[in-house]
Length: 573
Length: 42
Image (cartoon, rainbow over all chains, first blue to last red):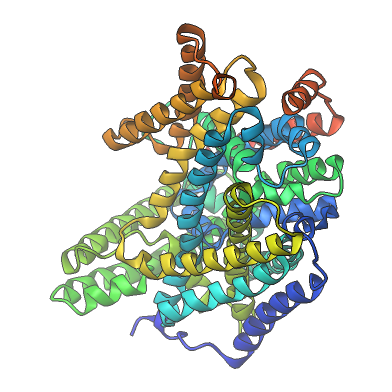
């Protein structure tokens, strides 16, 4: 029996902490927002959010469950390099504070797309709103599905029920309390998330052998190439380099925080312009260290497994597939070989840690450790091949399962419940912002724009119904998501396909006064077709589509306006 | 048009605040620390 299945049934303390935390958050959200009366209360949280609420809400929206499951696993396998992905974020925060927020605040808009009608026309506004609804509608489903599939695999919970439970918990307080419920619950959720991560980090350090201090743990990680944070190469194939982070990351963050309603709605709830700006500044200051810390937790898990036996493959469903096949014996042989290497590795690591000087003996040991780790990696690759042979459809990438395996097998009772609450809180906080934004955009940009002259109460009721509808759609997407391969990556790709275009439309609106509505609308359609084609022929990593899409729509619109002289539709009509 | 006026007013009067400089400096500082870390463990 594989040890990761041994804890598939949680202890009652874990259940109490898990259920208690989640139920408290849901009821707190409903209770604190029971007095919402009008559209401003419901969609902008009454415009009374302080900067720390906005900052935490923005961070909680971006940090989904997969952030806490995947990121440590990413560091476990590939080291700290992923943090470069966030280098552009602080730059984007400054640009948004300088340009986007003052405009949104002065125009008193409810959604980012509302502004596009005044600047261009209703077609452009509706196009941008529909692009958002499409990608975010699928995204909300995946935000629920991603942790569900992992937790169901390791805990044996029913995937369908888990999707429905997470979805319903979020729907209860998001429909009931709107934007304010989302932000007040996100404060609690971030508190749970930080508490869980700090306690886990300290426990990992405590679990290391007595001779291994934090500094020595970093030495061990560094000796195995896990501390290579920066990569200045211009390798087009490498997804995370300093350049892709600082250039691609700036454009991605500009699109996401500046034009995606799930984020825009967070800072539109600010008490004043300054509070909204401070909220984003807070995010700009903390995001990079926060991601660094989550990656460091993953690196410490790697160090922990230098002294303790780790599984050959972390995904239990994939291991079950191979163990039920004709390749079971070969897989067990690989496992036996790896366990022997684990013992050797632990011995060598302890000897290495005891040597303080830079003697030849230390160099020799380091070389031996590297060889053992490389051999282990080769065994892991062989195990993946066996899994593929046993089940060609099996997911062999086990990065998402590394951290949850550690949590379930190494943390004490009670703390497992807290960490599961961290993961589910993160899923709920992101989903809540998404449903809230989907409901608002549908109400303001489609419903209210076309059905005018009704009472405030009517529009609040409509918002609640639309939020509920999107909640149901998200649950349905989560339930069918299992039918698609690599859907999580697909959602990121869909985002990158549309984001650049939408950002370009906004930049044209802000900065290029002479470009009129018809040129922008045609340029947006042409750009979208080109970007889909570029993605289809697969000539560049998808993160760069954000930059290319933005540049294309701006270039084409300016060209059409200057050389073809397209009139504004409003003026023409 | 009112909205165009507001956008122009905002655009013509960008208000640079000290906190923006602080964020950019902090980002540069983080990158410098990561550079030192990468060099140290190289």
